[in-house]
Amino acid sequence: MVELAVEQLRQRILDGVWTVGQRLPTEPELASELGISRNTVREAMRVLAFSGLVEVRQGDGSYLRTRVDPLHAVLAMSRCSPEQARETRHILEAEAIGLAAERRTEADLQGLREALAGSAAHFHSDVDAYVSCDLVFHQRLVDAAHNPALSELYRYFSGVVAAALQHNMSSVPRCQTVFDLHGQILEAIEQRDPQRAKRLSRTLIES
Picture 1 (cartoon, rainbow, N blue to C red):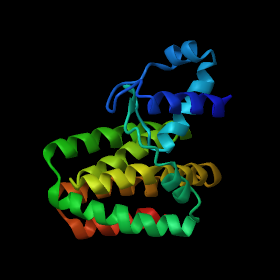
Picture 2 (cartoon, rainbow, N blue to C red; picture 1 turned 180 degrees about the vertical axis):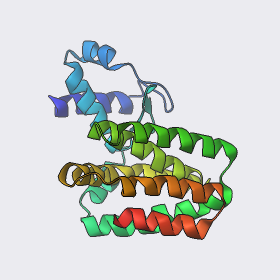
Picture 3 (cartoon, rainbow, N blue to C red; picture 1 turned 90 degrees about the vertical axis):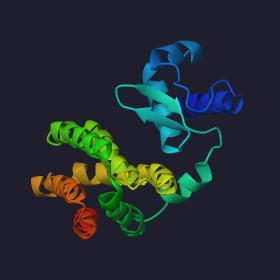
Picture 4 (cartoon, rainbow, N blue to C red; picture 1 turned 30 degrees about the vertical axis):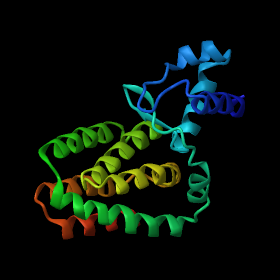
């Protein structure tokens, strides 16, 4: 049912039913239109978000990001090994965070503080909620580099990051020291210290 829902939604996107940047109908609305359950719609939207077609904004809804399906690129990312994923994060995320320390604005800092507070609220509770909040924080770290290409690459790669994070949090005890690295990274960015920000980011990636 989920695969069927994904194909129906993909076809609507290809047919131009929604425009790029448009807020999509709610889960109940889509469930009613497609004649399926809300849970099926939710899973289908997760697939579309992972493939990069849809952006899910927590508390706001889902938005169409692009009509060009980057599925092949995303599948290639999803097949990478844990070591390859770590290498990619070192190259992409840590370097972007170094740039963020040099280029961040006050608005970036405010957004990062809000995202970190959201993560902290869920760190010792629901894994799915924490992973969603943590991805927002990491995306905002990369966005603070103010390089649209880096931001877009990280959005596609974030599905791999989410899968690894979910696996780690489900298989090993949660470590407050590891979470605290997030706040230290934010502090380094606030202080415009790119070398410290990159060093802390690499430590976090290896944790």
